[in-house]
Image (cartoon, rainbow over all chains, first blue to last red; front, side):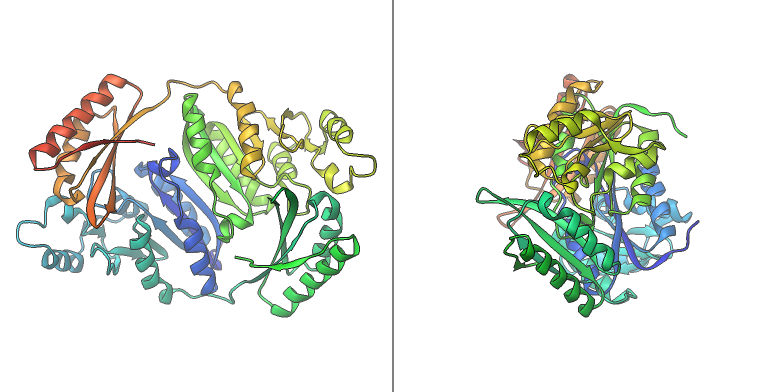
Length: 252
Length: 252
């Protein structure tokens, strides 16, 4: 087993609806950006169906390797919400009503409306700590380095807000971007040479077509602002030298 | 090593830009729907960065387990396009210019414009077969059960079109959906009972809020039209019985 890499995270999206194409995931990009703000880098993501063995295998592979794992989906009140049971199985503990979650939810619903289905949402792996949900009450939870959140974006967002202060991050990765209306094939080799000179700056090239013109966004990512700017300047000079007219872009 | 499950696929999205949140992936949902039309079910997806060892590990894990693997991203002309080399490494073969790809691309560009960078796009694992790219020429490729496609959606779409006739699918999974303006907590337990009676129909429940009202979409997926309709009817009767007013929805 590899040692966990500090300041890293993996994201596990749980749900048949993402794999079937019914639901277009938007949680991955949101979580990645928020984690980067606190200096945690997402290194891998997986999407698995609502099958316990698949969830268990993915959680155990990811939690062994990354400092943090964030899951989304499968913590609602219906039969296909099996994430709590699956996380419990991954950690080899029982899944049961969490006393605080149960009491809080019981107090939330009018008499007679804390149904068996809703009670399901008060179940967590034994020993889990709760992640508050100011939007719709039923909480997320944390077991060791695994944070379990809802799949519904506006609920996930508030759970993530609650989780962020608990993370130990490094320096956030800074980024900037340069656009140019030249095809990648014109500057690819020269760009690779700049990358070789700046091994501490990740340079990505993303082609685009805008208003019928081919071009590319060059995205620079590094922890050090000075090196980031030096690499970007080297690329700007290179592009200008072959007839490009590079311009600053929003890196996000 | 588990045996490959027939008529299944995994999708591997390759690229730092997806993990950083810069790029919102839309390829997963597109590929899933197209594969289902030919009877191939996507069972897992992963997102890995532009790091050879990560790509190799993911490809080898997935190709051992699923009938097909589809990758997107990393086959362009710049230094960060390392998918061809990585797939070659995964299969333990060399990566070199593919004679047909090289000749076709050489004929495509005007004299002097088939640059070193563009020549990179003619490289494949030795022995790969090409996947045509009518949009921008540089082809995708296939090695055994792994299909390697571009990340740019409109290029990926035509490559996938070329790959689909090569697949051996089973029966497509049919789906239908019922919507209801009731919170899941009101019908969750009864829905689970219907699921128990129809183990051959996957029933998913996806909550929504529309115009301030809580509700849920119940999505039914099965190979058999008759069983699909029976399960949906059972749920419709159940929902009507507790005061719901269920309606048909588009399952897609």
